[in-house]
Every structure is written in structure tokens, then in C-alpha cells.
View 1: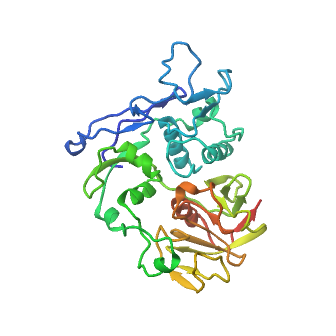
View 2: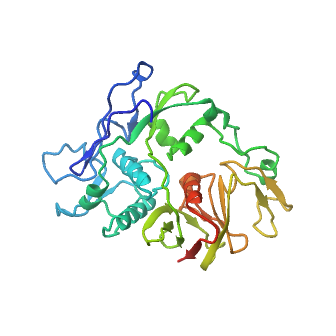
View 3: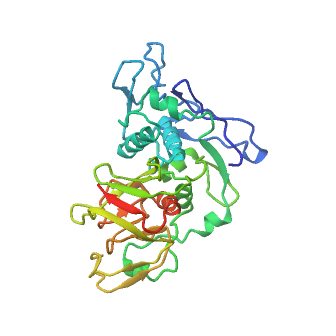
Length: 356
């Protein structure tokens, strides 16, 4: 990624973020914003030995649940963003254990991602932030980089997306409502978190901004998927039984449950149209006729549709990534658009999909 930020340091099981290195002249005046009121140079530690000498500001928002120095696990305030959590989210995203939206917030998606990462690396899959996990995921490379906004980013903006399907059907493309929405999705970030990193940004073409430095997508071939209703997670496995990737997912709802048993992948469609049929799907507003909605990230199924052998059911993206595993779906399996896009490239026809 161009115009790198100085490394966000994660050494000796201490998580901290620093600003730095040499910027080109065009970026030299940039100053990243604060997270939870603290400058990005001052980051709460995920793990640190218990000590009376530690500045309370450094460990703000962290509650130790164990005092065993070899097995300290920390919890964070789930209502307040933490730069430490954001760093961990980026590292998990890179590893293929997706936390969903990178927003600096602790919660179920982060803990499920931690458990998946632990399973990938032969650790006890308890979803706790402890010294073993930190030692395994430690990465000296930066997790925040810089990016120059392009005309492609701004051209994907179509303005406010109507909620009514009949109005959506009149549009040519269900793109992004704002530039920040598109950029946040491109870099797997929450919109508020993106704005917090760039408090003075105008988000216009040619401007340099700070974003999550994601690395490259996972590659390989999935031979089996697990859709775990209890965990709210989709997991893909390789032929040798190893866990390739894991994604947070919304899996049906009480009124519209997902299928049970084992099914197969029929086909994968990128940037799909969406056919709304109230007699087959569900009732949306007052719409009682069949409608064809155009493609786009803000369409009902996002940017990917993975069709399953169970009629009318599939795995797909979403226009609302921050709500993954927080609200119900109409029986299907909903992922963030970026996770659905990565998964689509790992799949082939007839891969088994087991609902557990």
C-alpha cells in the first residue's frame, strides 16, 4: 500500500500504535484522528503484566479477567472503540478469521474470529485474548496505511438508496450512498471508524487518507462449508481438513429459519440482479408484484449470490455490514460483501454446505 504509516507496534504481547515514517510532501501534513478520545500514538495494551507503575490511561477500557501472568485474558468496553481492538481486527482479517467490520469494538464477531484463529493455529479455541493468541498473531508490520482516493471511488456513488423495492427497481445500479460508505467497505471498516482516522478529510478525488492495511485475500480451494447457527459463523475447509477461512454471518431468523442438514453449492454469481417475488420470498412494504432490482453493493443480496441446492436459499452479501450477526435474515446466510467476495473465489460447484 502506498504512503505507509509507521509500523503499529505489537511486540512482547503489548499492543500499541505509533505514527510515523517518512511521508511524501503531499501527505506530510496529515494527522490521524483519535480513537476513544486518545491520539493514535497512545494505544491501550491488549496484554501487559499487572503493575502499579502502568499509567491508568494506557489500560483504559481494559478489564482483566485473570491475574495469572501466563494466561491473562482481557475484555474491552463493548460500547467504546479501542485502537487495540482495531489492530487485532486487522490482523485477524489478514489471517482469514474475519471479524466483520473493523470498528475498534469488542463483541461476539471478534470473539468468534479469535476462536477461529485459534483453531487454525492449534490453540485452545476459547475466543479469549491471551498471551498465546497474541504471541501467535504478532506482526511487526503496519496495520494502518494510506490511500489516495480515485475517480473510481467517487463514481461508485449514486446518492441515497430508497428502501422501497419498487423505487430501487427503477435505478440502474445500487451503488454507494456516499464516498465514505464505499471507502469503508473497500477497506472492511466501519464508516465512523474511517472518519475518526481522518477527522479533517474531505474525501474527494486525489486526497490521501488513512485506512486499514488489509494485506491480500485468502486463496485455496474449499471442499466443505459449515454454517454454524449457534456461533453465527461460516467456515470453509480445505481437502486436508484444515480451516481456510471463517466469516461472521447472519443465519436466518426465528420467523424465517435457515435450512437444516447438508446441501451443495449450485452456482456463484458476482454482482447479481435480485428478483423479488412476494409469493416465493417475503412481503416487502406494499409491493405485491415481481420486481427485478439492479446489481450493486446496496442491493438486498449485496455483491455476491452463492446459490444452494435448497430452493430459494443462498449465501450472499449485504448492504449493511455492521448488522451482520446482529439482526435476522429472510432464511438465507448473510455475509459482509467483502467476505462473500473472498468466499466466492474459494468455491466450485457441488461443494457441500452443512448447517450445524
